[in-house]
Length: 323
Ligand code: MTE
Image 1 (cartoon, rainbow, N blue to C red):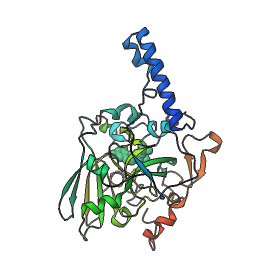
Image 2: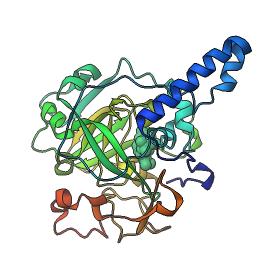
Image 3: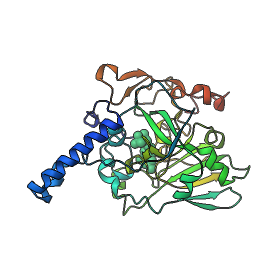
Image 4: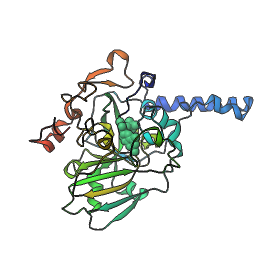
């Protein structure tokens, strides 16, 4: 896994979405007014990629009991400007600059492998399959930073039900969009494309695993995995494949991007576990993005704080061997 450089740290303080949008509106308004005087060619100079961020389309959502409460949300600004999306560059600030090119409509998700019948779901159908829920989850990256994100989606299990997998299916694999003419940054890393991840079926059926369409009540910005991604909150962030185009049901454990890269460092399970260190750094603590310096460092929680809901999935397993 590529590790963030100190210069990647976002400088923004915690900002609510409303403050964020108001600030953006003000900046856009001021820039538009100034543009007439300065000439259109100067507008690009005024609007840096950070200030040019636009509000996404609103999604209709319902509240969910499966939500983490009581923790300060990470600002929209940080969630959308500090990303790992290697198809669009290796630096944390690259996806927001480059992912705008991703064509998110039309968009389909193929269902393949051990299913009653292969199918293809249109994104509009997926958006309407179930009521979209607001789910606030902790988001813990293997690089030892974390966020708290208000995602929008519904349980992956609801979608899997529609896929009608056969009882032989023991694993589910997710494949991300890949087109090297669109994602021109794929040769910056040695990843075998397309980006792919997988879960055991019982993990995928846990209600916490989320088929995700939005954040902060709006459609996902491209850099966060538009138009649909997976979020598995008790695992390190790299298990959450972005911009998925295919879901495959399999009998055997599928290869995954990071275990193909370096199986010693990135296992199939990748559950957040403070007592199993990464071979090159500790996982005992994490840095909460966007918090004031003195409050950034915090203890990492077993299964990222979701032990009550998921520990049973791993009963009797050696989590050191199955990292
Ligand atoms: N999915 C794809 N297709 N490509 C990627 O590079 N990066 C992963 C994961 N999903 C990645 C991906 C990693 S390493 C992390 S930590 C999370 O996305 C980051 O999600 P975020 O940018 O929304 O925080």
